[in-house]
Image (cartoon, rainbow, N blue to C red; front, side):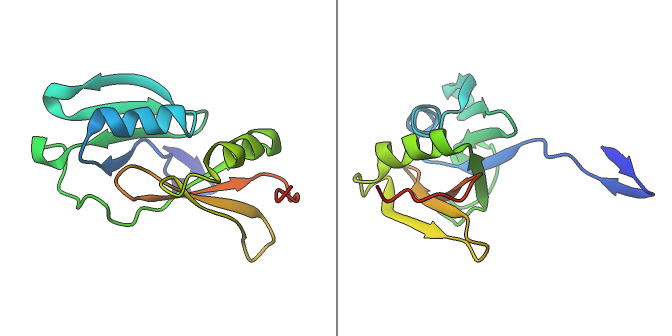
Length: 135
């Protein structure tokens, strides 16, 4: 926890996402979104992954990792540098199981792609720089 000007600011520790299949979900977050797999324990239905700024756990609620509903909406937003964003667009754009294929624009004009994990959670991946990615 960080204290700034008398206010307490919490640091993000772990984002938990309920899934049906821990192996399939952890492979998706590693292979599609570039997270590093820290560990997987099938026995407890849990996997942990990390990126530069995000620690993520995928878990199977039936194995007592939590009580959330699988497939519910999650608010996971990621930012990628332009080159990595463009590579992600190329990888998922034409696979409608992974993306709607549309480069969306935020109200501020920042391009983003909606990516779907195997349990249909929506992850919004933003570019850090405004560019035309429709090429």
